[in-house]
Length: 194
Image (cartoon, rainbow, N blue to C red; front, side, top):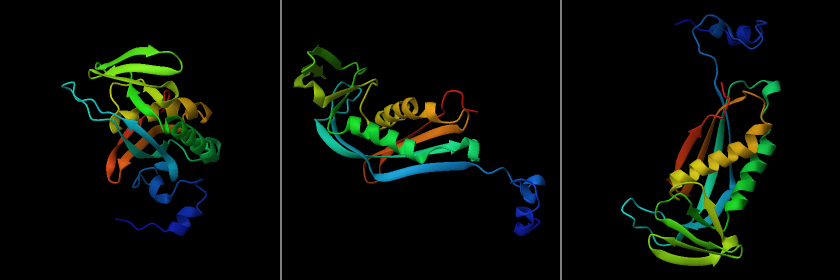
């Protein structure tokens, strides 16, 4: 294995390609940016439904969110604005904060009435009536941490990806934790990603 003179590689005029990369001995760099803040959280209630039609009791978690973006290119013209990404994450956390999250596509969920002020529903045979402003129906089949990570990722892509340079982001990874050491991570490529 040949040692590379880093000073020579940095000043060889190859416009960012090192001598090691030129010789084919090193693969191109992959760049990942991430944001993780204590303020990226939402406290909410849910009830996981099990395949047999039983469910957990109504309970809550303090969920935390972190996001990573894999970049095709970290050059100036492909810059991802951290400020707009953080604003999109914070806005989604705000929408989910202090709500009961319900899976609208769960086979054991039945929406009985939505008057605009109240929502009446049945979940696994039990009837609930709540203020409509306290409920968020999600387009998924369950409110497990896995499904919440998927929904969050889809909504983040819809909110933030239109502002990204075309082809700049190859994948988005969203991690949602419901307690220390317990959570789920999903990874999705934006439409049109290289």
